[in-house]
Length: 298
Image (cartoon, rainbow, N blue to C red):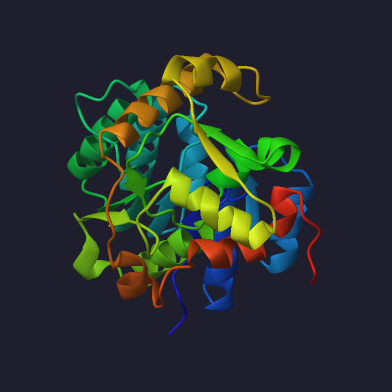
């Protein structure tokens, strides 16, 4: 029996690209959405995916993308402040296409009373997809392990310091590839998971100071965690390329959530649904040395 077409949105992103690769390896036909046709889209096509340029905010565009697909992975860029609109359009298009399994990328801090507009939007989006009856399954990852080099590589390499406003609380960072394996597990066999909300974590809860110690050991140079006030950190990251006011507001609220323990915890979801234990922080660092400014030995 031939396998059903699966639609993967955000296919050039951290999890989307990995989901496409893993589904193709399992023999699924994959349609991948991109915002523009560039070299990243070319790579997806070379892997065997059908690539379509899609506008999240245009119903006809989303209907075209979902035509013939019965399973969907939906992920929206965090810089955007139109998640509710995009989710509503995607839900409507999914209804029209007869989608029966819709894996939705949410976040661990999604709740109605969050100080982050994005976290509130994720909470509302979960509701919209539940009401749409399209087989919604919500994944709520903790911090991606990839956030460490994104937020810290420059100061780690230049100063041996990791500046973050996360206090003494913990989280268990999870790699994007592990999140992708959970998504693939859910898309491959969705029936028993529909309506569920899954918190995804890495294997070990750590403070940022403990993560800095692991970084120092793996990179071969001491790394010190400097705990910044949230507002000071917000001013710093507002100057980073790709940041906007909406995302900075979200990240500041996330920092307070971290200080309050919202991100703390360990779950077995990656191993139970994704098929193997999640990557540890030392393993992630060794696999991503170049992202931290260290030449790879491979």
